[in-house]
Amino acid sequence: MNPKGLPVFDVMIIGAGVIGAAIIRELSKYRLQVAIFEKNLQVAQETSAGNSGVIHGGFDPSPGTLAAKLNLLGRHIYENEWFNQLDFPRQKVDSLVLAFNDLETQEIERLYNQGIANGLKKHELQIESITRDSELFIVKTINSHSQSASYGSRFIINAAGHYADVIARMIDDRDFSLKARRGQYRVIEKTERGLINDHILFLAPTIHGKGVRSRFVIAGANGFLDVSCILLANLRRKVRSGIRLSGPKPLSNSVGPRGH
Image 1 (tube, rainbow, N blue to C red):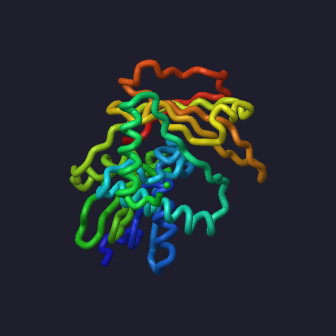
Image 2 (tube, rainbow, N blue to C red):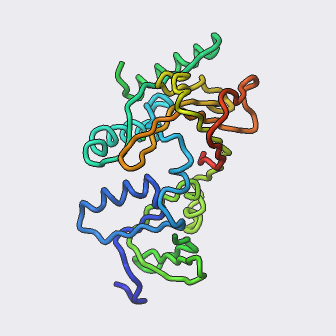
Image 3 (tube, one colour):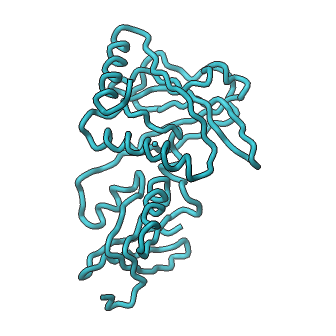
């Protein structure tokens, strides 16, 4: 029943990043009226853009957690479904976690055992408000011209990235909160690719974070792939002493928030 004459959907997804797009792709297999809402002019401009583009291996999250379960499930979807069904640039590489002392070596052993325990063997509309009306959620949006519109939906999927807690609070859900961290990418010449030998390099994590990572990035143009080196630094308030951004002059440098 729709007493207000609003456009009504079975499911509305808030956020057109990787997660939102994956969800709507899956829901498209069913006979449902589905809509996806995105506040930016292009898709995947927030959380999906501010990450290293590496599929999680599955050794990082604590065993038994939802993150551990989803890490492996997401990796399975990438490797067994999306790689076979979708056409996008990708390359399979190995990652190395580097240790420089006995304490870091112990941390790597812990990550190894954690990965085994997780199942590894030896991945432009702004929402103004959400209210509940009878059997529907009423979602009010506003565009860049201050024009508002309302929609109804039986279900809402929150895929708003590092704004997910803001969306959740619109229905008084305060079970979680997110804090964006500052991250920095530096892209260097592809001639320096040999510095990392086609690997993804991680430092052993500490209580302050993962520190500096390095990898090469795949970027395509007109069907051609251009592989370059990339140096990723998670610049947090406390960074391990002695770690500095040095080396070849970068081609580009960008800074932005990362969900945490």
